[in-house]
Image 1 (tube, rainbow, N blue to C red):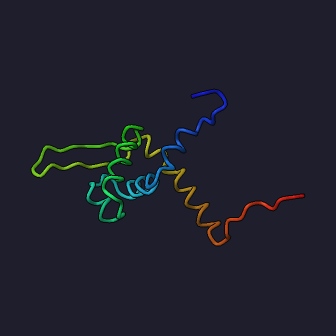
Image 2: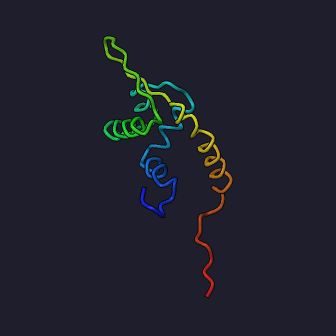
Image 3: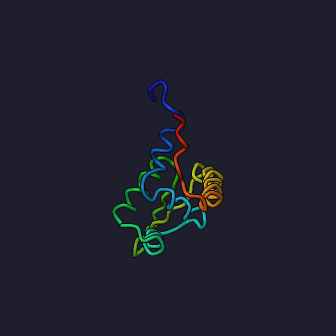
Length: 111
């Protein structure tokens, strides 16, 4: 990482991608989950879902388990690293609920 970068920049880059937090929240609620459960309950485009799951897996946040069955079965679960994120997500959720009644406005400018 270049000098001067925030130490959490990579984390925010990963988590700010479309649907990444939703996928993690979904796995935090119930894990493991199958790909079809994500598609049915979250209505995420399958290509986007596959990309996000792959990125989260490569980051070590999500585990992918393949079962040699007919038909083939693949399940996703939070890794220890992913479970460690859950208190942060819960805090962000509490913050959003607390402040959602107030419109987001930029701070007043002083002349």
